[in-house]
Image 1: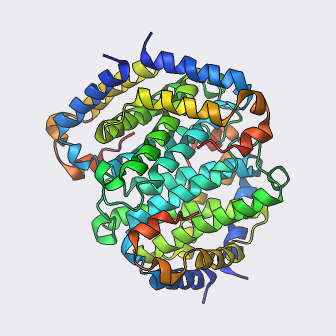
Image 2 (image 1 turned 180 degrees about the vertical axis):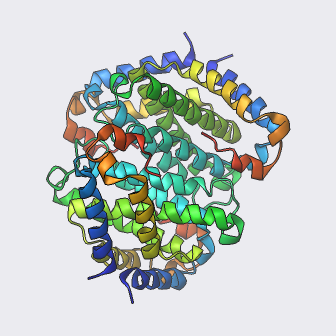
Image 3 (image 1 turned 45 degrees about the horizontal axis):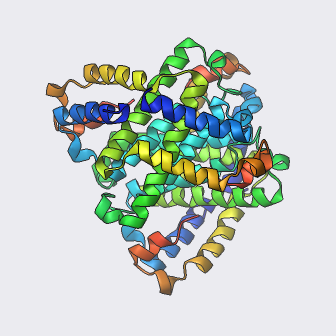
Length: 118
Length: 118
Length: 118
Length: 118
């Protein structure tokens, strides 16, 4: 079993034991994911770059936990919508390669910025 | 090799081929992750629940791509900060189990809400 | 003096007294605004509608403070970019009226959803 | 009539003409506000500081519109929850002054960062 499937089962069991599935509409989960993403960003907002050295060990630990929270909600949302996250990323990377040809966008900040990252 | 490690390598190669690593400070990546999370939420904001049936096939496909974008930036951020996402989720789930004991929070929306999801 | 100009001056003085202008790049301020918007959303994420009655007095007070935080950062960002917020809203409402003609989109959730709120 | 009250009436009329009030639960409005805040952040995410000069005129115009969108949703949310935004900011600034005494936090990035901006 792949890592993401295994994590999905861990999260699913956690939710079932608490009878929280009733709150987990995709709409609510995407809002929760966003809130966690903001808590992650909060650690970086006044830093210059946010590298591990600038964060320091204590903050890095908190960042690690916020990253886990984001992934937990993403995995949970994928479970509710029957999305295979691993396949979705591979598929999206194919689209990204077509959209941003390496020889055209290489190292070009302006081009990088022009091509929106959707 | 685990799925997440394999995806990390795919994303890393994509970035290297475009010489985009220079833009990928953890701060910028966490902002980009947030923007993708908002694009995901945008699909749900006026819906009642956002289930697959309410979304419809075309929107579900877009949602799938936004979910992939979120995971790509999360994987990239983990790569830059040397975070093992799989281990981080397992560790966080242990903390969550201690924080939200199943017998105390079971099916209780108020309690659920009181215990912040950090 | 208009309310927004007066609030701008209040916030400006607060920042100057603390010598915090150095942290207030537009980039940092837009990230901070986003984080406050997420703290606002957090209060609503597991609620059905989030009306005043569902929130209750204590939560409504917190919501009020988060709304103030969002406005403070928006006013500060406008100050740094020399944007007249009052004029910007009036101008945007003209664009919105042209984009969503009342007789075409009236009460239509699908149409409402199709026309993105950018 | 104050600027914010006048803008509230403009937005209210726009919504009523389109019969969109039915979609405007506080929960939905806070999600919409967040999405607009992310569209604002998107313009800055790969920039160094995001000053007017770095943005350029065309992007600054877009940023101005996103800022207007954020304020429109904030004003609309305040209308639905009967919040006086002007009074809320004045009240919050009193709390902020007590929380961040100028002589203790002056120009100190570390202190600034320690005191969370909630």
